[in-house]
Image (cartoon, rainbow, N blue to C red):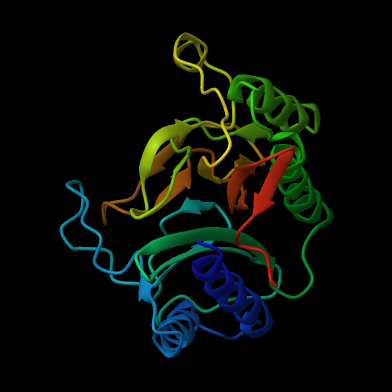
Length: 247
């Protein structure tokens, strides 16, 4: 899984360098696919089916701009502009095992509020990285993550959560970034060897979202921006190993 994670980290690092005003999200997708094939890996998202959508997901990356929360479809018609924020979600399978991560990239100069949104979302993910250890219940970490986001005046998306990951992209358990009655009724006891894709999606406004007519792209209901950061994390002796960080 470290090998798959290293591919994910390298691709996301390169895409952050390429993502500039005037670049299309389709160009970023093509670059990601080229790097994936060069690493002899499989792009996890490409071809995934969704009963709500008429077509399988066409991209190697999810490219979500501004108010798009997740599952943005790469397109030649989406040209990045100065001041945008772009969330790139990307995963691969290599030698039978998966890695999955996401980052939100500022396109040129962005507003102070969007800088604060990105910084806070990174901090929310870091709370999970710092807090994970065997024997702890996930609700304790989720509560800290939620409190941090909300104390900054932002909201945590409820409709989409993190997940277990291994030989498949999505495995049990579901890993929310907030505390709910459902989580408290069936809490996750962290154990050494468990691997989780933790992915806070934080909105500048309210947490309600909706899905566009393509059946894939999720946007904030109030039209305000959203940020998304993710790492594949292994519960290890005494703490947490980040499997999708650059080596």
